[in-house]
Length: 183
Image (tube, rainbow, N blue to C red; front, side, top):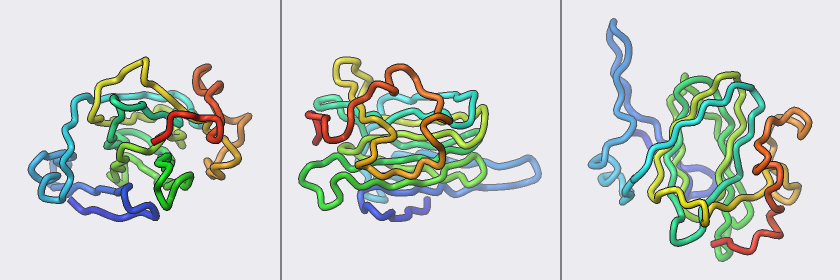
């Protein structure tokens, strides 16, 4: 597994090793021993799978408050996304900054987003499938978020607000400066 640092050192890009032969490709996208050797001591407890039918679908920016905060390992199995992680750790030197990475079925990149970050993505192709592992179970009472197009975050999503396909919940998320429960 190749590990690539990003502009925010705690967010990592992981590229698993692929084995190809005439039948196709085999790949371990996650292996506990490999992760431990790389210095990651994470206990994933839940896998999530989303399918977005339209390009321009925005999911996020989401996070869970303590004690249900989650590390996430995100990958795309069909299509492409611009994946975004925003540092919401108040005492961090990168507080309020973000990392944006294109993940696709073609590039096999995965993003490891640690606790203390809000996460979201925009689909760049129709019928995009995203799989992600998390280290804490979903808790509706601890579910939080930040409005995806908040000007203070200055994220270039590559689409305008009128092009975005959002859930009702995501369209009503608070601005970054109005979120009380950060890390």
